Image (cartoon, rainbow, N blue to C red; front, side, top):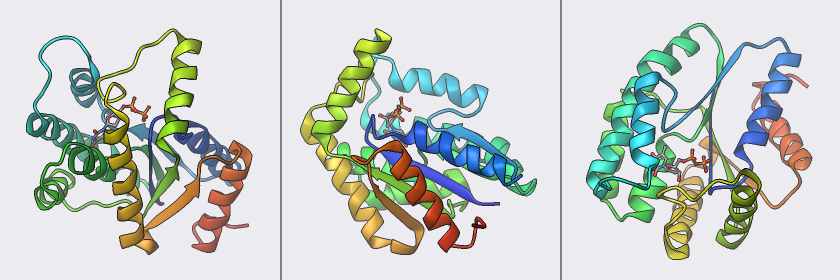
Length: 212
Ligand code: TYD
């Protein structure tokens, strides 16, 4: 079993890539779950609503991070660890690296404290690999606007942040990946979904987690 976290700016194509990996795992007869953060359990999904809503009292940055961490603790113990114990792969849309990117990179909270609380929330559980779908802020915004028109949806609290915020988030992701080359796979998200899926499967085969 392998725990894979998917990260990137909005619209970077995480969902399609998770779908593609799911299809391959199924074809190879490998059990897996797909899950997401914030969320993944009933309680954590309620916390997600609090975090992303645009009405009501907005959480301060520290409050925001504590809410992410609270949901993460619940998610790790009730969903992720049990799945890994059952030898299933875990495909998780966002995880601890999002807190580093958004709460440290974006909001400017202290990095050491974020690392500490991430560690506490996960009780030391880390993904085997984090897949970064790297995308420019401009392209991310374009894709998001397209999605909003298509789904008649509106920007959530993070999507309303300025381009500079998202640029800091992107740079934080790239920094995290460059500081831990073994634990990260970086893909250029401007490529087609098919190319991205092929590239990811290739990397997972190189790591001997998947057979050819
Ligand atoms: P979501 O709709 O899941 O974003 P996307 O569709 O792009 O995956 O919203 C999750 C938002 O929460 C996203 O903007 C990133 C943010 N976030 C954090 O700020 N910190 C975190 O620890 C996590 C997991 C997410």
